[in-house]
Length: 236
Image 1 (cartoon, one colour):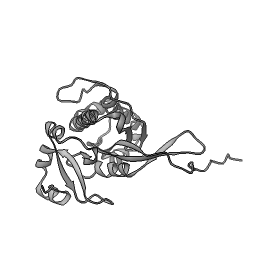
Image 2 (cartoon, rainbow, N blue to C red):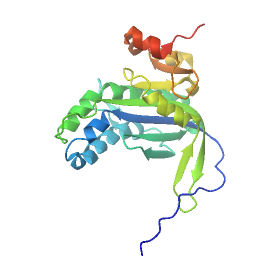
Image 3 (cartoon, rainbow, N blue to C red):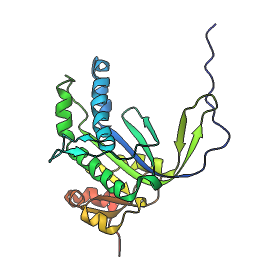
Image 4 (tube, rainbow, N blue to C red):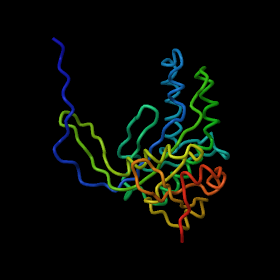
């Protein structure tokens, strides 16, 4: 008689709120890549390459995809990470991570997004398949999350507004590829020094208008129709 799989249940009470930094990413075009014949032989190699690049931004290493490659120092490790099929979720305790490191992480992810064509070129040497994902897209947010603990396992999950928000931000504007919530509360001087501006994302599905942080140059390079459909300037 086959063994019965245990039901998925959680402890009756969630953990205390954690002020979290949330990062999510996905790969644009992954479904098309995955639908090709025999691609199952290559998906692990491809994903390992991508996750290694993301890991270097967090754990340190050579950012060989950058305009000026160099060695990146390590940041605090996440308290939780989860594979999501075509991307991943990472959580940090924001109180421990620090605002300076938030800016550093944001810049590193933006650089990886910009250097993704070089990453794809390196992947193609090991993955002889056409139509590799053409872009990586990041969403960053912050706020209270709550830990859920399984009753029959030490495994945990997290829920909370900033997780849902980061998920929406990562795919909100395909021409940007990096959007952070202003809930990160980064000092205006830091934003200006690093070329970021604040605008309003006005059509986030399931969310009210949200003030977000984007690269100023990339925002200005959007075509007028995209800007008017997705964003509006903050009225001072």
